[in-house]
Amino acid sequence: MKSALLAAVATSALVLAAPAGAQGVKIGILNDQSGVYADYGGKWSVEAAKMAIEDFGGEVLGQKIELVTADHQNKPDLATSIARRWYDVENVDMITELTTSSVALAIHELSKEKKKIDIVVGAATSRLTGDACQPYGFHWAYDTRALGVGTGGALTKAGGNTWFFLTADYAFGYALEKDTSEIVTANGGKVVGSVRVPLNSSDFSSFLLQAQSSKAKIVGLANAGLDTTNSIKQASEFGIVSGGQKLAGLLMTLAEVNGLGLQAAQGLVLTEGYYWDVNDKSRHLGERFLKRTGRMPNMIQAGTYSATLSYLKAVKAAGTKDPDAVAKKLKELPVDDDFAQGGKVLENGRMVHDMYLFEVKKPSESKKPWDYYKLLATVPGDKAFFTAKDSGCPLTK
Picture 1 (cartoon, rainbow, N blue to C red):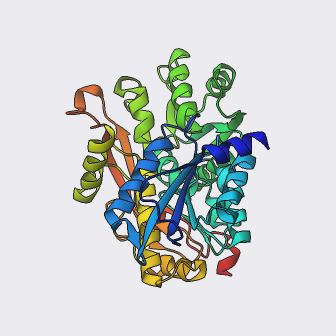
Picture 2 (picture 1 turned 180 degrees about the vertical axis):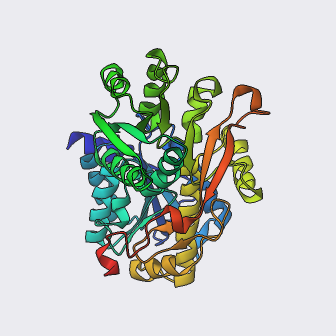
Picture 3 (picture 1 turned 90 degrees about the vertical axis):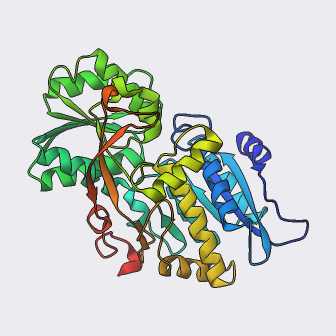
């Protein structure tokens, strides 16, 4: 209770606040701002949401838009306490970002109970639009299915037909291992083993030794953020790659590649839903974000921009903040912005858009700061994500 109270007190209201007595639209960014995923989303996602609000004009339905934010510390109970206060006391209309799958699943359930919109961006589990789907819940940017199709499918087809997983020991890791394993076996590969690793581990040695002794051609890192970068650094110390095995960063983004540096990250194959240098629109977003933050956005931060903008467009189109009307518009309106072009939202709340398979450049191949990726393939959205029918979502039956 003490930590929940402190978090509620620490929740900060940002710019564009509504005038006293006005019933403006209030959006909440709830994510990890101090822990293992702070660079992956963190304050940078808050900045992306602010950009979207500014680009939209700062108001909707004649009222100012307010943005509030809090750090859930990757704790579902703390996140639920904050979200409940936001919904019940502070009249927050929509919560987004929601890094960490266990947190996102908890808020997804609370949003269903409170009939409030949530748009998950930072969390990965495909269950959010599968068996855990609900009428007011949406999922942007990527999910474990899309990552499995992109990275898992590509590496297996290229001859990496035996896999061993280092799996984050919570909902996200389980879903990523499951979805990738299904893609690997569907492409003729075999999973020879896996080990579950506690979140925010500092020592990966025993887990990496198991991966090494498995003799698997591919060591799949079903983790994210600092856990991924630390496991890659320690894998180098154990000579895993020099010994002939290949590391697959199943959820790596530009932020983690930047943290590792090209010398350590070169040659890694990964899947993202956005990269700043893919096309003119992505460059437009990336360069504006760089100017205000000093860094390029990854798919989580760019996805938060898109999710916030899409929500505001849906409110405007509906002519009301009513969650049923807004949810209906979110599923009707196309997603065409600097994050995704030709995106569409399925009946189960999954936003479908193209995904990209990249290889991290060698230092000698990089021509300027943040020039990190070579595009290997574009994975069409309808191939990357489950169809609504195949997702397992009860809403589609």
